[in-house]
Length: 251
Ligand code: FPP
Image 1 (spheres, helix red, strand yellow):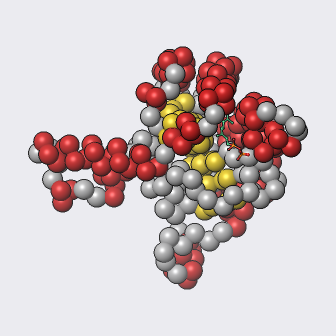
Image 2 (cartoon, rainbow, N blue to C red):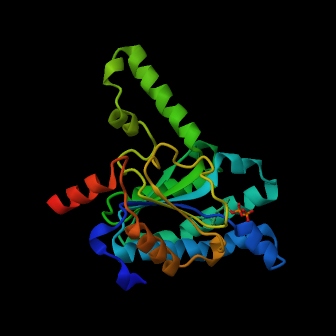
């Protein structure tokens, strides 16, 4: 599959909704946390695949604002797994020139997780390869409201004029900041929804839903398959097919 990918037409930004860990675990007769543990191998494989291809941005939905409502045992288990995974994986990420970032309400995470994340972000901040962003205690609506609050503050203090609020300016107030909008959004686990993820950034993303695959089963071959499918689609951004193909010919 990798050989079929056109390296001159890669998605600059891939977002992933890692869904189906709980159902995968249930199928094995195990506790839900078992599924999250197995999901780590899939995370590693996905990151490796992105590094191999030279993808610029990968943003993974690791823990949503709404996930805080899960049973305490599961929430604690995911937080412990997060701390352990960061500890285990960051040396390798650093070696591979990956820059780690987070988006979301990081203040709400346990102190141990915050500390591990801050140290890892600091360690990898000058890396120039893949930017791996973990969405943690994140929701798209929360992010948009945060941006509005900051913009309103600036207008109130007189440092920003209302007529200077443009789409481009608005984007700079979002947590993803300098990252380009999402080109390809992948969701495993069979549900066809966005679940409050990157609502602004997916305006023109190609959506790729995997009906028969839970996250712990996801491997880089699936990533390559999704990228291949993305490359077969015609991205029109609201234009006609003729307009898009004539622009391509001119280039
Ligand atoms: C969704 O499956 C998955 C999560 C809410 C957690 C994802 C977390 C990990 C894979 C571990 C931590 C990752 C990193 C990057 C350190 P679900 O539990 O909603 O599954 P279900 O839909 O089958 O119930």
